[in-house]
Length: 238
Image 1 (cartoon, helix red, strand yellow):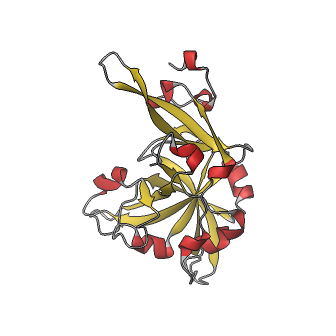
Image 2 (image 1 turned 120 degrees about the horizontal axis):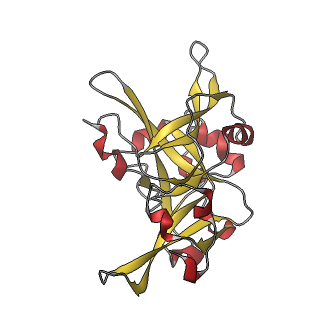
């Protein structure tokens, strides 16, 4: 799964990179420790009122998808990921997959490897790694978004990351990884009127990624500083 990631690019950079026509605030601050239920930046395309023309927007979504038919938003934290293998059929995701697809920009994501080392309670230590593009660029993670209306009439916009089987080089850390959308497929992926199977637009980014060990400080969601993504020697991992 992808349960924590970093998204620190400025809103201006995201707007330029993804050719955004409209930024809808307030937008999230840069984060090096994005956790479930956090607000995250997302790129979507929505029809303009009156004309119906698609407008590419930078918006904030809550990470953890809440289906429109949910009785309450409490289950969203458990729907931070949608499996590629079942995303088109699973009731929680299939409507969003058909017409509400988004891009979730990320510097990279964290995964935890269960080591042979034991902690003070005698349990195996989970060591975090940061997995990121080797060229220093951004991941355009494949996402879905949904709208949920509370009984009081308030709207919640939420999202999920599509994941797949990890590439061989990274599978030793965790067996799942986020899928990405290549730049030449952004338009079709975002277009709610795209007629073909959107799964054909997705890619596994394994060959372009590298992983390094990071401090266990990332385990605490209260920690959110740029040094969290930096590599640390094995002896300095605490």
